[in-house]
Image: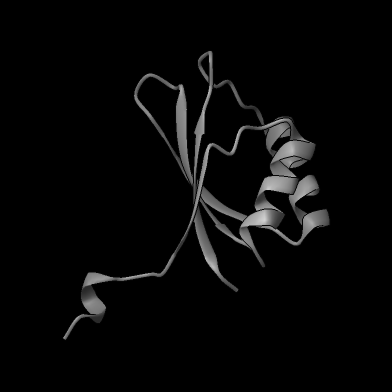
Length: 85
């Protein structure tokens, strides 16, 4: 399945608890989207998330349903240093 990096910008510091994460994962599952992990900026106002999804549109649709921004959605491929010959 294709990989995507999503940049999300928040007006206030992001506060996310286990219930919030479970709700996001449930919305994502309905859209066929899988949240792998996220990086949070030092000011807690941006996240950079790695997702598996059938398309960028599926990510945007899930984000809308979850009430989350999806400011930038970029399809990426994986490059690992140990895999380079």
